[in-house]
Length: 124
Image (cartoon, rainbow, N blue to C red):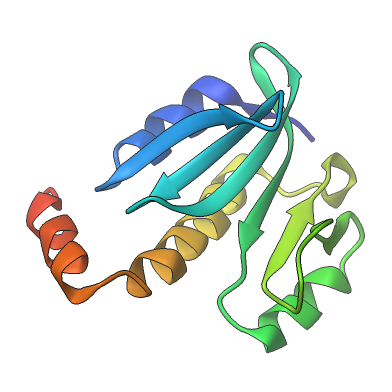
């Protein structure tokens, strides 16, 4: 399963405080408040092949890595990050929900001041 770069980018870019940058050669890294919440690998210029994200808690990490196509993110320590591969067959709407949970987890760890600034940017 591949994901539309345009759809994913449009959705993530609409969330308060989100920025992205190409790092480590060819990975699209998404951040909130300067903290990484997702890393994506490209299949080609229009599609995302896999993505990594921060997991909300260690119990959820165990559930995720038990699924086919989801594994511990390489170079991560502990039960914090997973990588979702194409064989996981996660549809784009579910992938966006997973990415939002990662965003929320990272955002909740930001300083109270930054969290308040982001809350002020929320579209009502």
